[in-house]
Length: 180
Image 1 (cartoon, rainbow, N blue to C red):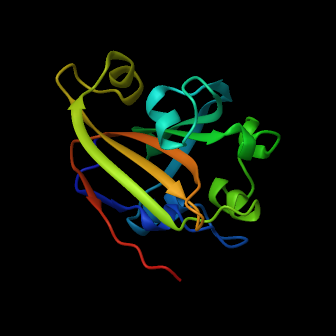
Image 2 (image 1 turned 60 degrees about the vertical axis):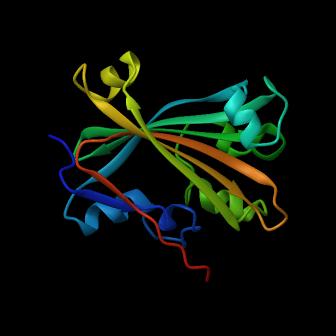
């Protein structure tokens, strides 16, 4: 089953959640009468890939904390989401440890002093790789959308780079942001 006509916006994903508020994905899916979940695939420190190093103003191969997730809609994988953080920000925090983060990563980052002020997103389409086809249960000819998001604080410091690889079929991206 594909996410036929699925539309999503980035704004709720960069706003810290209030205590007791569901995560943005769970809430968004529920608004459409669906169940949105995600599974953590990997957490750890790795050398920054070149594009991530560039996004975060780091030297190539400098260590970053990565959190890799698979996003599910009604139990069906629809997205791979890999978030990267400088070790100077995420090291020693729950971001660097396996498991769910109470209130979510955005709330934790806000508590650490990092709130989204400027968000840059780039979307491209390409054929899925073999690994992506396996994880997302795609056919050999399927394409994916890749959304890269770099989040900066008011001082212009990039503190998160996320690469989302999405099932393209039936997907619509909508952009809106209102500070407040």
